Image 1 (cartoon, helix red, strand yellow):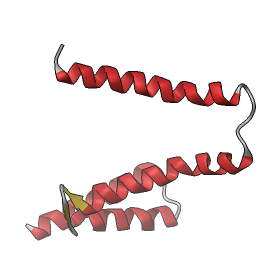
Image 2 (image 1 turned 30 degrees about the horizontal axis):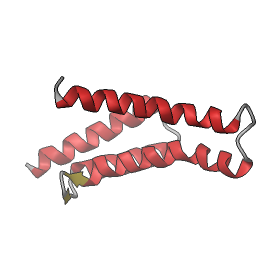
Image 3 (image 1 turned 180 degrees about the vertical axis):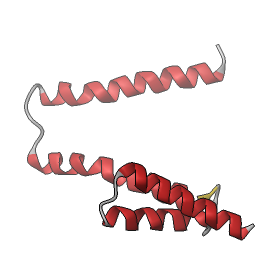
Image 4 (image 1 turned 135 degrees about the vertical axis):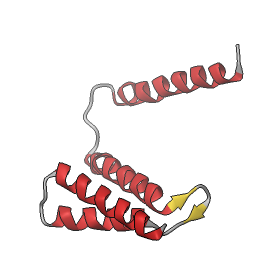
Length: 103
């Protein structure tokens, strides 16, 4: 068995163990309010981190390029309550235009 498959199997078993830990420890009781608020914020925080990394990172370097303008244009479009499809189109158009002018 190759090292890749060992990593895949170990990751799968670890994921199953983590998912089973909550129900085993709580035993059918609801999650305490203090933790429920934090769990509700994990999704948006993770999404924001992924957008930030995708926008400002290029490997190990910090970059400012057309992606920054595209995300900024998307933020403005969202602020004006544009539909999601229009937000994506605006962001893509602004990013492509910035890259075309930058060379």
